[in-house]
Length: 236
Image (tube, rainbow, N blue to C red; front, side):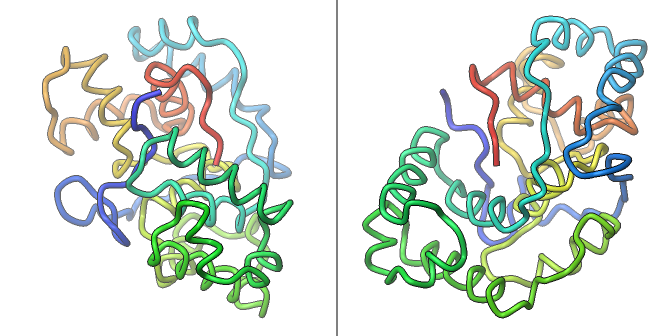
């Protein structure tokens, strides 16, 4: 698989400077992990965008399944920053082999050099340890599924190593917000350019304009566009 879900800068990933995230989107109705809205979203998008309609027909399964584990997504997203999907997967597998399970408690029991031995840079190892420490002392102990998108961003963006792209991954893969457009994601931008401009580079404004037709289901559109460049569905 090609480099895909990598952010473009640390800790504030973007393509051309910081990308503001001022729009809010509703979380998936009901419990986290609920994708009852999925078919409705596909129907909504398909009536507005014939390109994405064809893509959705080509990739019928699996659907996105938000898991509710915010700290897992935070840690796994930091691992995946600025590297290819293959490299990120290999690093994560080494972390699993080292710890048995990658969670805050076991990260804190692991010294920095052992984390580095899994393939992490010093900075990433420090970021991950910092996130684990905050989680263990309860600094991030909130009812995440009750927060609005803007509230999630306000709580996560001050954390070292966490930028807009990482928060977008939390909103999509952990909390199941249905209208997230991760403009800092290299794979999404490439997929939009491949499918809508014949590979021509697009400005952020052009990407936003294309994505407007997908509202309020930009997460769903993003998921299908990711599928056009990765054989296996990504999972943070």
